Length: 527
Image 1: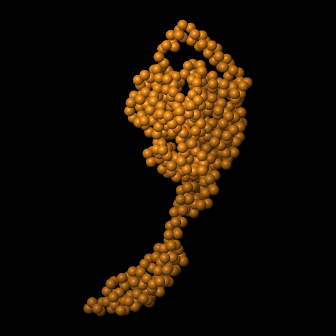
Image 2: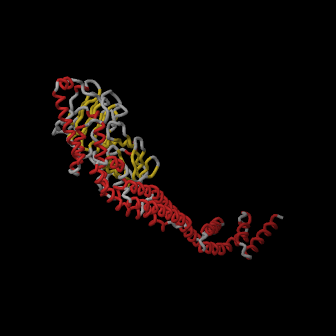
């Protein structure tokens, strides 16, 4: 009875094959008892040709998965001839090529979307043709045109503002167009016109004594400088005016005089600058008379103030008389190149100066101030100091607090990621100093185990306190590094015997002791 049923199934499979019902025939021979029969083996041999033919048709039509399924059936039936294996390999390679093409298309769409979110409209327009999916390409093109249209509306309003000589209004509208809708050829072209207007306006405001307008423009000029460098002259005027106002509010008359002299060096015919210098000269004469009086003699015997006794950043440098400066020791280190700062009980630090600090990949041919490890551009980003503020300008991918940026103001505690792995934290430990610190992740340390970058500006506090730029893990001593005449000096500001502690020149490679703080400073060898 079972044998008769077997012959019935074999007959049904043979009939299905004759009628072209290949799948029914395949389903029948999948039973092991049928494949072991002589007629079943013959049926399997007869299935090779139609399955191969159908697999080729599937391949020609682009149905690669269906072609692969037919060839896999032949392999399962034990009929994987050389022709079957060759065809199967060709189909598998085409499927892999399709997968790669799909991945590249998705990557192209992702890059275009990232460029759109970052506001790089012209670059995104050039990359749009690389998006293969018609729906994605159409959606991105529509969003691009929407942004270009809205950006054009804001630029038209900015042009009207320039026509009314409202330079600050035009600057604000241009920034809004760039921030909300991205950078394009139109925004760059308008930046040239706006830059010239800003330069002339800053010169006029400075000459007329409208320092309030200069200070208002100061916070808005940085994005324009990157596109139109001629604005840097106006930004410099605004920065010096802001610094002079800070010097005056802190009663820091020595630095105020230096700042005013710099302003006069830029333009000598400004009456209010000359009047301020005349007033400072009178104030200096009055101070000299007070110092020469009996009261001045008593005051000279009083203990010098500690850090924090006086308002303003000059409290950190309670080591200089009102007029003049300490003589520069000829053996003191010059602040011309990056320095390696080694402090007992503290992390190694790289001390860099300058208003623009270049960050990039270590070991590259391009010279950078901070050579970082990782998959970075040779010149990946700049950190720029404008007065008391620090700004970051990115040339490669940079995230600040999980947001991709091109230009941004840095604040204490901001978390930065350069490239995909280089992580650091921007810190402003002391409100009494313009110096900032980049604290690197332990995986991103520089050569010679450097884990902190000190962006040095006049002073650097070293000690166990939370307001110190370089923190020691023990002791109660504290010292301040400061610049005099372009050279590095140090003075103890806390701990045993600090009041009588002298100013010491910092010499290259020599260990310096200030109370219980021991440090060594030497030139940093770039690797």
